Length: 193
Image (cartoon, rainbow, N blue to C red; front, side):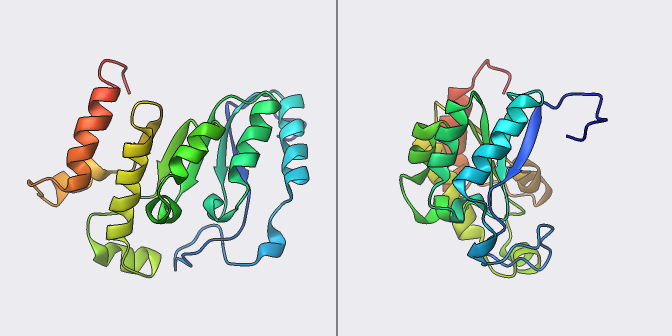
């Protein structure tokens, strides 16, 4: 925050990488695959110290690029916990969550609180335009893995799935939606989530 900022934040987006494995034609982060641009753990620690001394602890939203391309994401979360942060959000395209079973559990064990999954559509054609390739199968798999691995312990934010299903007039539910209904809805019944 700048020195003249009169309000304190409540949620801070912390870019942990500029890398991404998608190369979306519409990338707002100009992400690529250059590893030289990644901040070190020490640099991220200094950023966290700065945030703590300027109104923290905040909710930390780990972002980038694609934060899951880092092999030390659990260490970043653990370091944040040690520094006094208690709520960690992950902004992700979900590819690693789809490809690596158990990865969501590792992040949860480190202290991850919430996943914001990029989920554009239930049609592959939309992914081809926005993300440069067909991704629906991977998006559904990442959603399933995340819900199964973290069902009762983690809030999961999935962008517009129900809205897209209604908009596209899809009446029969996918495997993902059945798992979502069973696990997520029962896990958070009566919590206001």
